[in-house]
Amino acid sequence: TSFGFKQVQEDEKSKLVGNVFSTVASSYDLMNDLMSTGLHRLWKDRLVSMLHPFAGMKHLDVAGGTGDAAFRVLESINSVSNKALQEGLADTKQETKIFVCDINPNMLNVGKMRAIERGFGEDRSLHWVEGDAEALSFADGSMDGYTIAFGIRNVTHIEKALSEAYRVLKRGGRFLCLELSHVELPVFKQIYDYYSFSIIPAMGELVAGDRASYQYLVESIHRFPNQTDDAGWSHKRKDLLWNIAEHSGSASKKSEINND
Ligand code: SAM
Image 1 (cartoon, rainbow, N blue to C red):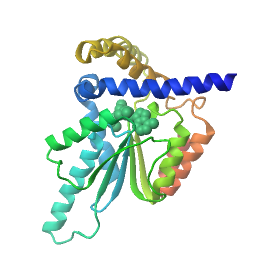
Image 2 (cartoon, helix red, strand yellow; image 1 turned 30 degrees about the horizontal axis):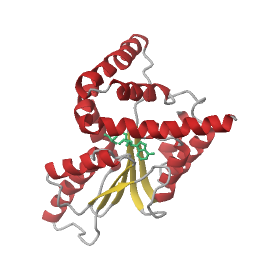
Image 3 (cartoon, rainbow, N blue to C red; image 1 turned 60 degrees about the vertical axis):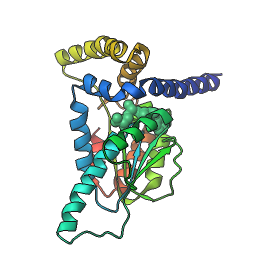
């Protein structure tokens, strides 16, 4: 049946995503730098600055992989709260909790090692949780922030991930999603497509010894809905994003989504 076929496709997608990130885990950071020419660092910095982290916050970074976004959130909170402490303005009663949730234990293990290297090994704010974006283990209304960076396109049912984000966020909490999209400018698009489909898989083979995983990565970006195409962007998803935007108390976000 078509349902049976869909089920197989979905099971295969989850398995494939699992395999991809198990193989790429150790070379993941180097490849990110090479593929984006370091730009992913600036994008993640911007994501965190838009989050406006604060001491005592409960934050969830889903598909958090090797902890990149979570470390930035923590660094931002530490710098702000150190300043507030010096000025006698810090509320030290609230415990900061930053959860890194990822479906792949290998990515989490690399993240834990990186935390030690970065001097966060003893930091009690960081919590590593193996889990699925589609079925989070966190309580309703428990998070001030939710981020997902380069993760949502890997999730099998995006609607489920969005409704889980909505469920775990507190009223007024912030939802931020960082994702690669499509290039529209004609000449730049050709260069970008050539770079994506030819150079990135070759780089994957050369640096990580794994062409297939990087081929998957490129294809998953290509398949992800573009900025304007409504065909791949179901009304259900749009409604959920509206709900999240309203929940986060952002009217401008709602109009951005509407204009998407
Ligand atoms: N957020 C990190 C970053 O920006 O560097 C990692 C992004 S990496 C491209 C995608 C991550 O999504 C992988 O670590 C993978 O294991 C994770 N992932 C894929 N499907 C997931 C799911 N359903 N739930 C949670 N994590 C998932």
